[in-house]
Image (cartoon, rainbow, N blue to C red; front, top):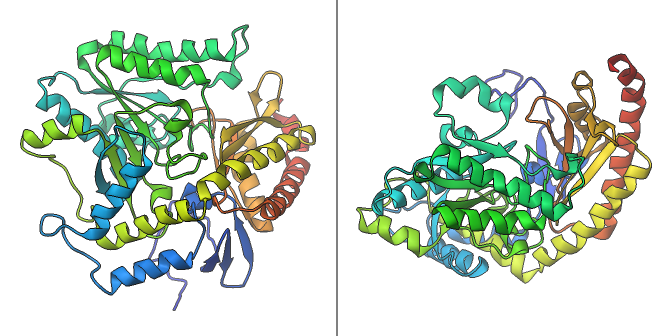
Length: 450
């Protein structure tokens, strides 16, 4: 039953049709119109929609129990999912704590880090350095670590104001350095910020190994990852990877950290970890951190639905699908193909200034001048207009402002990891048609803002 009374309110007044059902990479509204889910929702639906094996395993758990509070019972789904997660992570990440979403995962990671510092006589450490731009969640703690002005500014007076360093946006740099040299230069900003903040006060460095919504699939030079790890070790600062978007196979490995041989101290997971089948997230950490906290009286933190058996049954089924169907390998293969196809668009659309990403976490950025990477006039609102054009044609993509949330236009192209080559052809046909329509609209209008 539906009605037109607006009891439910959303983030904006942009109405959408009612969803009817999903199949694989496709979603269908109640009129029967089909959409390619070119962004996996919000980079969530990694194994596609309505996977029958996952649904069957969820149904089996529903027939047994849908809730068991973790202070009252252990459950096999939560224990089994924890074991499976550890088995799929790099060696050294061997303890798991469950949550219900990405913001909760980031909050939990930071709270574990802080309680570890207290338990080991380092109570002066409380500052968490993150990057600008970045996105780490919408709860107050995670938002304070986020570098995206439209989301953070309204609440800034209510937050501590954690230190930031510039994200490694080397694609904007115009200098004579090599990419590796640029990577080192950006990494050394962390050292400078630690020294400025006071080394004994810095608790952790939080970063997205591949950028998410705020930087549009930003990948740093290879040299950046090892140097930031070394700097953290030098100063006794914990390295936290926010893999809420990148984890669970999105970049072509289970964790994006694996591309660079990095083992963070704590990893935050969500989104593709539950793949949209149930609200689910986790932090994965080393026993080196967890044991002192437990010895000091326990982890003073938790959520009602943490380790929910139904959600964990769904998560376990998702990880089994990733392995059994070789989905992570497919993400790497199809990601390379899709990235080449996106790069090909640059020859036809001069306002595409950059294509970037890893695996099936990909993005392209629109600019007014490819040589200088000057953004399009913000008054054009290209980042919202292309999304609407594509949606009208039956393609769902995801956009944000690139330059701190205030200007610039990037678009995430992140379909489910099960996508096939013929389906990439379908996606690209709709995307090219959308860009052609956008070009017809913005090119005449752009002259007004020169």
